[in-house]
Length: 467
Ligand code: BGP
Image (cartoon, rainbow, N blue to C red; front, top):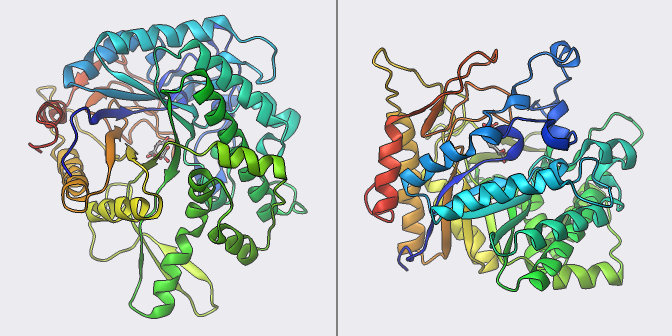
């Protein structure tokens, strides 16, 4: 296979990390607006300054809300053919359960999509990227409750109808599999476990089921509104190696992928596969699927798989018989944040997903978070970023051209510096475009091209030939 003409090249963002203007024009609060980032699986408490209404990085983001024209012009200059963003759900339904949408929120995305289309850039829209309205968390317990399904469906229906001639590519839930993987699935599902009595495993399975049904309903209604829509799922894909060639460790690597396949199996096959029921047994949970839900899941299968890939992990079974997963592969170099750098892991992941599902794949996140230095002459020499991205794009090309994997696009994470989700910091930068802002909120928000800007422009211009 070749890299197809019309391959989607671009970058990815999320509203809550980028837009700022967190209460502008009638917007309600999302889960990301009150707590951001997690360490060791425990959501950070809202720190005192936030409680006092002082500085909180994601509230200002890097102000895409007011600077979208300038930023989109820069993306166009790099030659983007796609740009991934999320629609901030509480901009459209401030509490999530209103009867009528907020027109000002809808009008904002009209302007953004028009600006993208002006340059021939396809919007790729995530419907839920950590932006569940906070009100739904307080009133209904978030995705623990089936009551969120009709609210999400209505939100999707409103935006599908409104933008049916502007947006073709949609993703339902960002990194949905993290709902099972994280100790506290706050970002993905709006859930923090506080009550010691709550059966956490069971809650995670139920939350996933509710999101699967919501996603399937979105796919069904999206295809009714515009049969040309392409609606995908979105996973965090953790390529996993056995820590040794001991058979137990080989099996451990497989076990580590089960929660991820749990989600993609339901969304791609349209039913709970043996992998899913086996995981339920292993973890001690159960999901009763009604005939009605089974019908919806089957009818609402996704059109493609999108995923994020940053690094690979290793797995082994420890002496107590437990699965242990680490990011300490001795063969790999690491980033400033200690994430292993493994381009071949991306090729392996592409092969694993394509072998399993035979659906087009879209890499919608990949990149290097690093501390950038502005030189005396104002330049930013981010060769480390170019090296990371070039090696991953080469690995993707091998998957396409040698392994015959069907890949529809590559949109690296944070083409412009935005707020980090894991740490809430600004200094963890991914962009080709530097933003003048520090972790204390100082800076002009001025945009500046890094060395990687022209490099990515060349990659896109040559359709990936010249990295
Ligand atoms: C993914 C999220 C993104 C993004 C990325 C990088 O999990 O989908 O929202 O932030 O990770 O993570 P971080 O910002 O922690 O470096």
